[in-house]
Image 1 (cartoon, chains in turn blue, brown):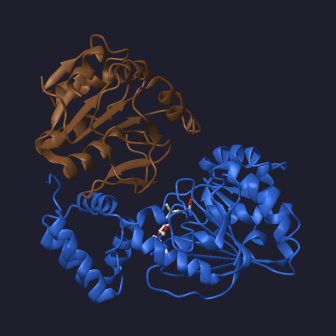
Image 2 (cartoon, chains in turn green, yellow):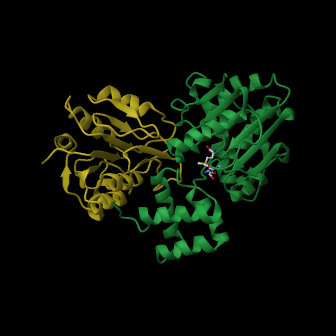
Image 3 (tube, chains in turn green, red):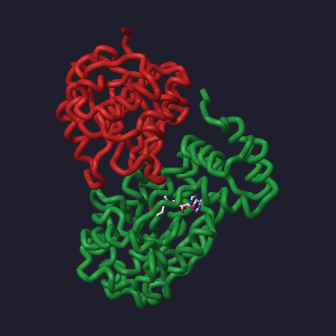
Length: 273
Length: 184
Ligand SMILES: C[S@@+](CC[C@H](N)C(=O)[O-])C[C@H]1O[C@@H](n2cnc3c(N)ncnc32)[C@H](O)[C@@H]1O
């Protein structure tokens, strides 16, 4: 059943093109979201036909960048789910603080709001000096924005409320300076961030971490791909390292689950073996 | 009026909670097809809606998790702040993309994806609300051969949303909340 311009067959054709020409494999993404995003882009960019869209994707690498950025979902927030950040503050960071060095991986970090939130937590826990934040995403465009530390000023009120709910005690505005309609975060915060493209579908483990945060990325993957990514995370975690997922994601049904222990009801698991 | 088969999906906004409670109570203890409820609410309401409805409903209620298989005799509630999509393989996906019509979850997205996945065997029900959400979704349901039911705007707590849908998409049935259980 199809009421949309770009139908299921068209989508398989496009996905094959992306894999063959560019090495991007979206075949194991959840279909309904992908189809909606592709149709949204088809309308947005006013393609006269599917053939035209396909031709543009195949032949125009500049457009490909836009295509990948638009069919993935990049929406993010600072201190999203404040209770999650509260547990990081109260349980996870005090444990990590006993280590000489803390390496954190934000997989699928989008425009970086989550990474800056983490940097603020680390500063407030006095652990910043011995931490490194690796922030990766499939999209180079969002990483470029993340590395600048510039966010819309209009979002700061909402971020500030969540910061306080997460247990933040400082004046949130002390972390940025207002510049027209943008908030520029203190460059000290980004001094410990390393931004790099990394595709969870095809790239390998690149380091060992004490904490991996991958939130609202796996909801876009099918079960098989989720299983592969969980293996990748397991390989990339130190023993007793933590894995944090989004509020609607779970490790429970995966084959690596027996090697992890969940922290109460939170979407945080600790590697035990 | 025939009972629904396949999937029943219900969308509601302002003023729809009472209608949903009435509707669920009317199901009594009989077997029902899977039911998905997509309700706008203030962010931060968390899982309280699923808890509230499970107290009021004779049929088991759960907040939808990503990849949940869609099964009969179960009521799935779209979680706050995620869009709920129905996959062709009759599982649920969640999505954290932009708000649509100022809403996440968006009724349109759930209706559209359910229409594609269930075609003729979908029943979509739109209830009270002050928003234009749902109308585009109901058009898709029609285009895929599904059945469209709209709450009677005259008896809905907030008429705007059902009225808007009735004018722009049309309905197979226009019913009061207490009549809806008869067609599920
Ligand atoms: C909804 S955002 C989540 C941002 C942030 N983690 C949060 O929860 O607010 C999803 C991100 O995953 C990224 N992504 C999608 N597929 C990916 C892949 N195969 N490898 C790495 N990142 C991916 C997208 O580019 C996007 O930035």
